[in-house]
Image (cartoon, rainbow, N blue to C red; front, side):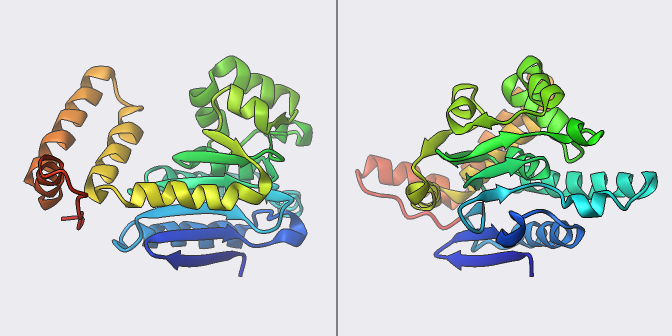
Length: 257
């Protein structure tokens, strides 16, 4: 098994579990990861997800190069589509996904992190898209998502040179939300997840939908989507509980209804 899954009081921890190979992504691992996120979409008891890598050296060193070296054009298209589908499933997941990047996030591993909604990095983290050194390009959405986060110039610099950047540089250019000491990474990620879990789950889902769908829409259409989602929450028990608790000066108890 390449992926481990644990659930602790509504927070799921998904771990890329192949530390002896720097958590490199095999075909089977991508399939397993896609299936796992597919199930999470329908599991109401999961309210936040932390995605990380086993060990201290790597979040993921990317696609297993031994597998790539043995395939042809049609198989390569299938490999790209498989990775893109996993990343799209992560990005469109109605549950917040936090990447806890511990060490190397290279190639396909970096692309997985890019698909997550929030990224925390240990101070030892390193990020790169080195595919041009292999005669290829990023294939799991990296050419599209990185440019949307950092702007095309910085994204192209990373891709055209294949050079890695530090956690501090990733923070400076807005690639990660925060950097923390390696020993504190998982506790900080869990604290953030717990903060999210304490809030109204239907509102959290609506925020995710508004942003992930809205980024691909013209502003006018994005605003219509926002208004639709905003108004739909007024039919929920959580909205009534939240406003009532505010007026009564007490903590709300949200039920996701």
